[in-house]
Length: 303
Image (cartoon, rainbow, N blue to C red; front, top):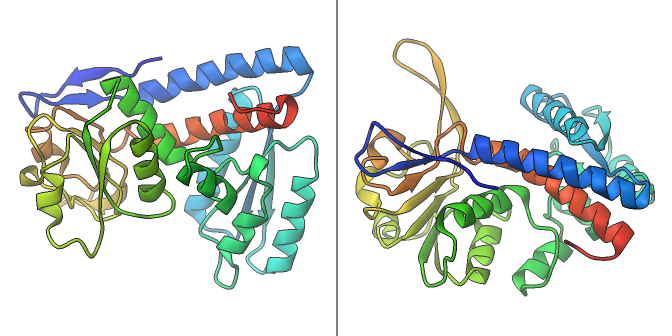
């Protein structure tokens, strides 16, 4: 499995990391492995996705997950709950899904409406079905370097980095952003790869100076085009996790990342685009995690 690296016209050295192509290959691999899994056990992995409320962006996102789940040969179970759903009702559904043998993965779409405790709901998901990898059991296993299910977006970032760089032992990785969803788990995963890891966040005194030390720079802040050309070490590999919709001067809408792509591409060695970089990897890794969860429950071990 390999992503493509295409020279960019905007810079003399940057190579484009094609996450869209890598994700397509990963989805095909998952589909083949799902078929083999079914042949061994007569079991089809099942993914339950729970959405509370009617946020239009979340509705599109979860429906896309359902489509990709079916394409991978797995079963999809959608639970669309009204905004008025109580926490106890939501926890009751999670409990039923935990005990349903046809469900191997459970994902509760975040953010939840006001009044619902996301931490309590996430931790109610059985660890072996926690395909988002956000529960405290899986987070703890990652922290102490034990096998577990890891969050999808950091896993996608790591797959792209392994594909591009191979052995990362000794490289200095800087992660800008320390969320439980991306920054923290990815920092732990990079430590396990043998990297020296620095994490920059809102209280870091000179984030640009820290970033300039990075052989690998991962940016996951949600701050549009935060990272500029002078933040990047020449030849560094840049992974842009952010995505923000903005309006151009001519009134058109476009997506941009946390990295000022056009200028950073002139100094980086490799860079992910937005869109088409990390984004497609998230759902592909969700499918991979669902298959891994099914293997854990049926075969008693992670792959």
